Each structure stands twice: as C-alpha cells, then as structure tokens.
Image (cartoon, rainbow, N blue to C red; front, side, top):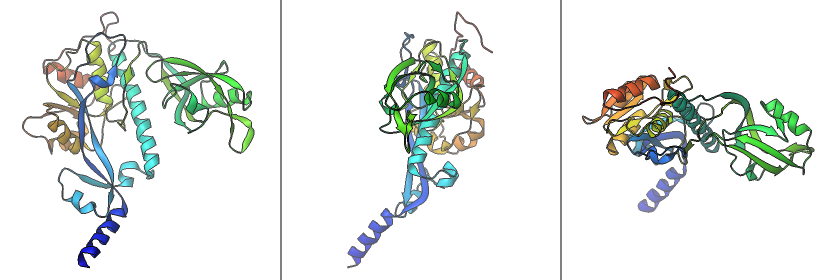
Length: 337
C-alpha cells in the first residue's frame, strides 16, 4: 500500500504545473548552415556559434530536482515574460522576437559592409490566423510587410483598413508584400468576412505600423526552433563572415550571444550561465557576450573558454580582429562608419 501511495503521490505531483520555468543549458550550433545568401559564393563556415537554453515549465515533482542542479535556474513566469504567462502566447512572442531579431541582423550586417539598405514604413504582420485567407498566401510569414492591397499602397495599418474597405468578402484581390529575407512577392487571395461582420472584407492578419527594409541582396535565415532575440549578434557576425570570405574568426571556434539593434548596439540577454555551459560543451574557445552579462558568463566559464564582453558590433569585430580574424569592407561600397 505504501508503494501504491508513493506512486499516486508522484503522479499527482508531476501533474501539478507550477507557475515557474526552468532554464537549462541548451545547444550551441554553428550559424553558417542556417544562413543562405544566394549571391555569395563563400562556403557556409561552421566557426561562429549561436547558443540557446532549454525552457520548460516546472511541475511540483520536478522542482526539487531542478533546484539541486547547479546548471539549472528556476524563475517565476512573470520574471521571464512579464504579464504574458500563457504558454501559447509566450511561444508566439518568442517567435516574433526571433523574426525581428533576424531582420535587424540582416540589416546591420549589410550596412556594416557598406550596403545601402533603405528603410520604409509599412504594415507588419504580427499574427496569421489559422484557416484565414492569409494562411493560404504562400510565402507570407511573421514580420513581413504588406505593401499593397488591390494595387493600393499600404504604408500603415490605417492604409490597410482603407484598402479593405473598398473590397467585399468573396472577391479576389492582389496582396503585395515584402518578406523579411528581402523578397518582394505578390499573391491573389479570396477575401473572407470579418467574424460577426459578414459585409466586411477580412484577410486574417494581426498587423502594426512599423519599419521594413529593402535589402539589396537576399539573405535567408533558418530560425526554425529558435525563439527570442538573443541570436541577433551571432547571426550578424555569421552574415558578415559569409560575405567576406569566411575569415572573421581567425580559425577560432567563436560563440556569441546578445541582441542587435539598428544602431549596432549589443543588448543584454537571459540565461547566460546556461548558455556558457552549452558553448563549452560544443568546444567553443571564445564567447562574445553583452558587457552586462560578462560576470554571468564568467561564473560558468572554464579555463579553456575566453569570455569577451562587447557593447557594439564594432567592438565584437575588433575583438575578433585581435584574435587574428579578418573583416574587410565591401570592396565596391567602402566603409559605413
């Protein structure tokens, strides 16, 4: 009876989901295979690594096990995600953060190399509703900018509303959009009707007014399974490495974490102790981290991992140059800064 009681108690404890999440060391993987630049003939090198963490909700049974593991860290959901605590909503926000982070990485890498990357205002896609007309548009994804509906330019959410006001449910209309990887697409879609308003045309997207960028060359980033913005610096360095011959690291295996913004600034990220464990397991010898996360990384760094704090993209590349790396500017366009 005691055994049965313990089994039942364990089952119950495991089924009780706490409002806590655990960060555990994830994987460090090379960014080169995740970046495709059709115009580049350089091989996709495997010497710059991004790193992530495993994020799991904690049950009552798991809590003491994670608490005893020095490589894991338990946080209340609100400490990690603020007021958003529903798992589905968290996943959606993490996906959006990754999309916009990878877009900023593309723009900042190209601008660093001297490319002209114009900025425009448009209606950015934040959500695509299942089974909606938008869900049937091939190639439309989160972060893309809807640039025209029925031939009418849509530079804001209000412009989208005005364009749809002249259409009717069931009508076929052209939708033009710019993808985050720099491809302009056009599709024909049959409009639906807004729920509860059968006379109002409906695409099925959540949008906001924001900037989009006309990339001079196409840069594809495969971020499937990666959430959040912390791979921004790694992707930026990976794009630069591929466009400059693959000599940025000087032969070192370099991991990087940190957000990147459109001013070249590297921002703080979470889970750096766990990420440090992951990059060491992957055999990295250099770890570029945001300046404010330096001591977090040192707390887990062993004798064979050199941790370098950086605040900007320029500082990150300067650090790699000191290690023997080479980062020439684009030969035709010269220096941006």
